[in-house]
Image 1 (tube, rainbow, N blue to C red):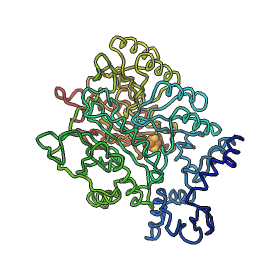
Image 2 (cartoon, protein in one colour):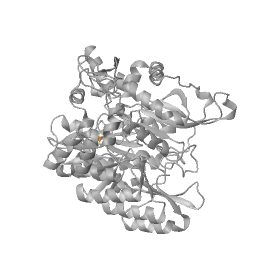
Image 3 (cartoon, rainbow, N blue to C red):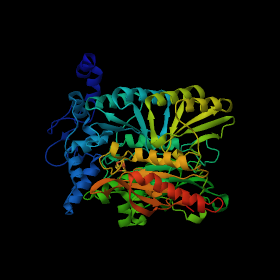
Image 4 (cartoon, rainbow, N blue to C red):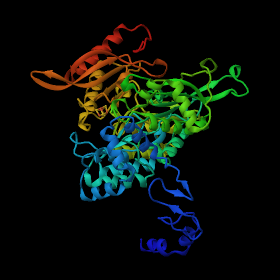
Length: 581
Ligand code: SF4
């Protein structure tokens, strides 16, 4: 450190480099090269020209515009204005050294670094990471498992954004968690708060026999675009981006604020300015918790243009999103207010070029989805190779299991581990002759890859065991429901059961075949955990918002109620009629 400081202070190379810069004195003085910097009242200038507005300041400008238009900023906006959450690193480290949790608005601001203080549900932090495209390597997953043993709860949760979370992090381990994941090439910046969440992609990118185009590299590129543009932080509210390559595992792009969906333009609909090939359809405004899917905008993009367009969309949203009412602060509400034409025109102005509109009848959308493709062994596009989808009940995996799965990926795959939006994981590139050994080792660690299990389609949010918003203990209840169903029925067609704890709908209950949302139920003069149950939700080609079927079912009665629904479906269906049909 001493060497570094003395080099910085006195090193001749640094001094020479600085003396050549066109900046200079703080109060109108002159530099060695005659260029003057003026700082005083009004904007700072260089040689009479105002500094360009810093990109992140568009959020501050939007706040000022809101107030000058008579709007009252909500508390979160005021907190962001008073302190840039991206500048809190030292504070977080100091608090961690002191073994303290954040207080007041710092609880919200600390989420910008991926740290959620989850009291009163648990007196600890949750840490959400960013795993773009859901892809990690064995050495990283093994390291994350070791870190969980030292600084968190000894397990890792897979989320519905193909992402990972730690829980039960004591106050004095917060900094250690952030240092630890960074040393494993994993970041958490912007994974919480008013930011763009983990970018998702098709989990079988590059190994799928049916996909149109690889999308994990696109999610990774988008991720790095976000990390390196400070104006991508400090949005009016959270924001989701997904890429779907048209393969057999859905990325649920239609539930995202921005969905990039691969489609084709066949030769018969091609023209000079639109050659036949694969493109990305731009869809906007998905937010299933508010009962809305992303809708096509008519814009068709080359893959290479998606990042710049996404950046333009985010900047327009930063300027135009509601900063007074958190419930109305998502992109959907700007779109509802403006309409797509006005919004796309604003994006074009933002990026300085027109976007190509193509009518739907020139585009061919594919529906290659196989609802069981995320579980069990399947052949890959590469001859002699298979991938294995491992069921992680409600997305939770112990550190020991994570280490053992990393060993399998390293020894019998190519080191890759891929997480899916269905809260499970995939080990790709297994040689045909190693399939039995992989299955044996997965079963030996207490996990499975059986697609006929109800657990294969089970999705649950954190629930009251770790989230203050929850009305019910979703993960535990989901497991009890699955256990009861498995004791009653053998499943021969996929049924998704989504169990979410509150209206934030992290487990997307509206798109489940059977969707449960937590509520409190009055029983014997007491309030107990319970659920409202929705039926018939879907996504992609079977898009649908589940309809309310039963209200105020106690958590204790949820397994038998869901069993009655499943039993009725199995009894009354015609031939291969699916649940949503
Ligand atoms: Fe918490 Fe609600 Fe999200 Fe569940 S849906 S994790 S209860 S915020």
